[in-house]
Amino acid sequence: MRKIALGFVSALVGGAMLVTGAGAASASTATKADTRLFIRSITPNPVVVKKGAETTAFIHVRAGSDVKKVEVTVAPVDGVNTLRAKDVKPLESWRFSVGFTDGDQPGKWKATAVAFDDAGKELAKDDAYFAVELAKTKADTRVSRFEAEPHKVRKGKSIYFSGRLQADDHRWKGVRGEKVNIFYRANGHSAWKWVTSTTTKWDGKFFAQTKAYKSGWFRASFAGNDELNSSTSRADYVRVYGSWWRR
Image (cartoon, rainbow, N blue to C red):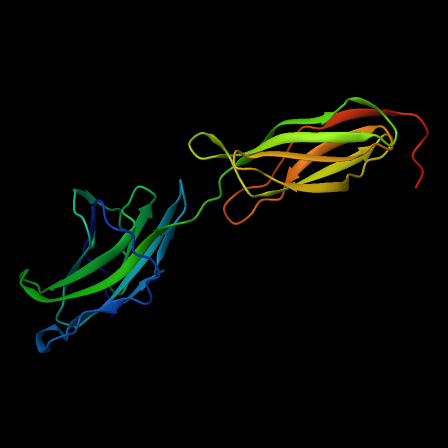
């Protein structure tokens, strides 16, 4: 007959040094007295938590027929501050679930399972390790103060571009060494076409230039990368006078 898991899951949440890249759950070496109980698996491992979301970890315990109750606790290996009970759902076959949020301690954690008989006597205990990681998130960016000057220019003369690429790191800061592309949309057209590229300086500022051919709109765009989101500036209009630009 299948057993319904009786027990609870709790967690100690506190500061700890970040430990990443954990593999499968590693159970402690069983002794002769511990053969009636062991932690079979902890999934997923590592437990990756996104900002503002919850990730559920499942703990599967194998227990002998004489085991009537199993209690499971989870705690960070490094640093112990505040005791806080974690939500748990009663699952079949000695399985437990525990939810983690971005408020929980990242790093290496230990799960401990304790088996009891009908009289409440402890029969066996087992430990296994897993990791909790915070998912990497990209910072928002913006292209500010973009200008295409002069706003009125003769065909064949130069148009100068300037602006600043910034990232939101608790406040807006200039981003250095990133590629910014300048695009152009001619009057009467809907498509944006690449004009030129430049690289941001130490404070995020960038400068570029091109030749004036026909009136239209210009804008600067940052494609983004593994750490930064993409962004595009406002469009700036330049009126070109003189002969029409012919392709």
